[in-house]
Amino acid sequence: MGAFDYISSFCSVTSTKTSKRKPMQTVEIKVKMDCDGCERRVRNSVINMRGVNTVDINRKQSRLTVTGNVDPNRVLKRVKNTGKRAEFWPYIPQHVVYYPYASGAYDKRAPAGLVRNVAQAYPTASSNAPEEKFASLFSDDNVHACSIM
Image (tube, rainbow, N blue to C red; front, side, top):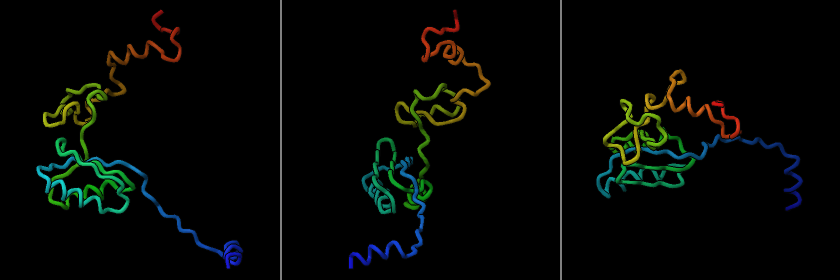
């Protein structure tokens, strides 16, 4: 019967269904957890979702990290259904931002070394920041092509 199945696989017309898989991604959510019970409730609400690979909780930073083939909005909705206030992780590392003390970027409640991700912290294309002027004078590709000389 094995040969018959092999030959029939060439002759039969099968409809292949293309399933849209969500891409592998990491979702970071800020959710306040005070005790082990809060942490367990949040973990159990997310770990049973389809496509979740790992769930990491950092209670000190109030941070939930979910990795897998999941939709970020569905993860956020599932966490909010536990009764906790939750939002996407609003912080980025301080060394990435040009102006970490711009209005709205500095947050006293942010974990150490992180600032809020706001548009005012980045230079605009029309701004002439001194760092940008000096950086354009030198080229890493050709070290002997200094535009000062």
